[in-house]
Length: 277
Image (tube, rainbow, N blue to C red; front, side, top):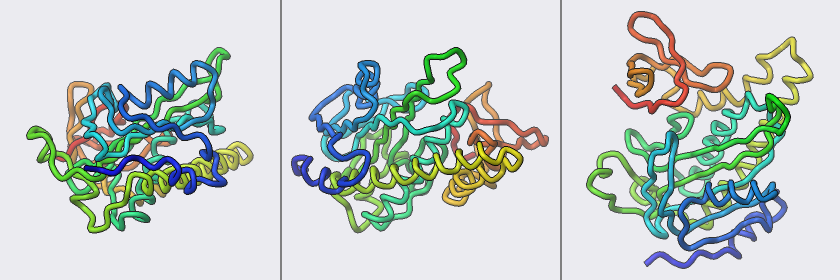
């Protein structure tokens, strides 16, 4: 049986970060993202909610997320980075890089990123990201008001429901060094803080040097492209706009994946699932 969650160990890992003193542990909850959103609606602007089990966990597009009790890490962080609303999709990319770095540090495993939401080992999914952002109250909402960053990672699972056996995997199955949930959470939140700080700095540079827009975009987008095997040259099928296939050909300025069809048309993936073809 998995050990009980040690909140004190997490707090020790988070000393000196924006997340110190903000972590709430829950045994069973519908969705950590929903709890975080409700807290934000109540006026909170910081917090982390981690659950042993989610009964209504969800992913991008409203898909359900299988959450085995105490075997996975299910967490949502309420953050307020200084990010223009049109750059809010970059938060998911920054989160992917943070999770990838944390997994490498505590599990010694190289996780792939099937942007912007899927955390992969080869063709199998080991986790997912769901970022829900809210704009300012003014018309048009030019600035991000807050964002809820939801992360789910399969940690100790060695078996999955039959319908997921060919699709899902875990750190336990992919790495000889399986971290505790507390170790992984501490590492992820430290890396997330660093990535959000870098994002703010990059966007500040973009604002101050508008004649060189590539300077602001290059940091995050290029680092994500380098960290993901899915951004360039992957033959994929996309389940949106009636479905289409093609080869991935980079990210656009908003961080959305582009796919070039056989006839040469380049399409932008806005919300559809991306799968190998």
